[in-house]
Image 1: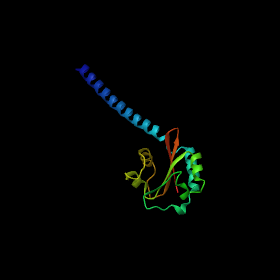
Image 2: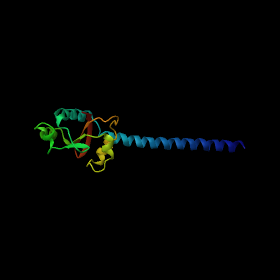
Image 3: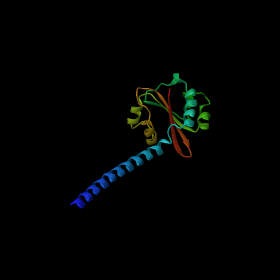
Image 4: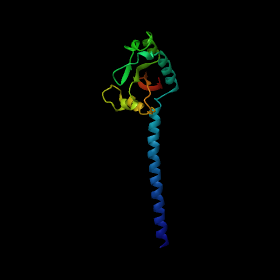
Length: 151
C-alpha cells in the first residue's frame, strides 16, 4: 500500500515538472524569437541617422490627403532640402514614412503599400495618442532595419 502511494506521488511530481519545463521552453522560444526580430529595430546608430533625417524635413510641407507621406530618393526634395537624395544614400535610407493618421490605422490599413516587416515594426511603437512619427526603413546587406522618432 505504501509503495503504491510513493509511486503515484512520484508520477504526480514528474507530471508537474514536465508541464513546467514545457511551459518554460515555450516562453524561451517565443522570447528568443522576439529578441531575434528586435535586433533590426531602433538601433542606436539608426536612431542617430533618423534624427539627421528628421532635422532635414521641412515641417510646413507635411500635408497629405492620405494616411501617410512616403518619401523616397525620387520625391524627397518636395519635403526636404535639395541634397536629400545624397543624404538618404549616404545613410542607407531606403524609404521614409511620416504618419498623418495614428500608427494603429497604418497597421490596419491593407492598401497603403507598407511591407509586412514594417507593419511588424509599427506594432512595437507606442500607440498612445495621435503623435506624428518619422519612420525610416534602412537597407543594409539586403536586410531591413527600422527606426522612428516623434516629429
